Length: 326
Image (cartoon, rainbow, N blue to C red; front, side):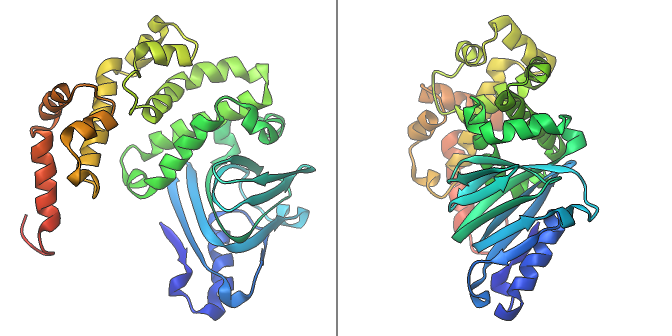
């Protein structure tokens, strides 16, 4: 859902529109724009994934300041895990100051004062989780927050959050949106416990989030032909028996799930603007299939069309004038 696009707002009203949109999506705070009011620009979106949400901002330079006075205004206790999409953020909370370069994660505990800013222009993708859904005490969150980069889960969770933001509109409208939100919360919990090094929760969280971590890792590496059971098990330090058991417990057959995920990625690539002009063999390789013939056979079994037929049908529809019949 789009909250704000300042291109549609008169310049003299953009500051007020920015503040109103931010108040709608997050907790009360003071907003200071780092430049002339007439140059303020922003796009904000908010998507719901069950009880959690994704709040995205692309804007000119500004500073957010959440003070003790703001804490007295009733608002739900929330933790936000954000990836810096553009620009360099400056974040301060609990006497720790940090620069947040592009593609790095940061955690803000919205139940406490903090400051965040970027100059010129920047972007952020923030997954906001209610504390009761996160199911971690504040001391674990606050201990893990400044140590996210030390966790081996940092890049995995970052990649997942970036993919979630890139396809937020269709994903939030999908019937599985709430389940996707719960899976993302599990990843946030696992990252914080890992970064905090808290053994009180580590074992339980590792157990609870294993399937989510396995599927997230697999989707991030689908394009690599050597991705299979052995690599998945080794990357997560589990036995093959445990690996198969996790997937079976969710009603999934591991090898068939991997093929289905690769086929779905290939189907999307074949109808993309660039994919319509690629060879079938190139798309097969890009989606982790070593054998183009095997890919074509499995594709037809899954979708009732060959990859070439699917590609041509998409190109034909794309070339039809608007309003033509299907």
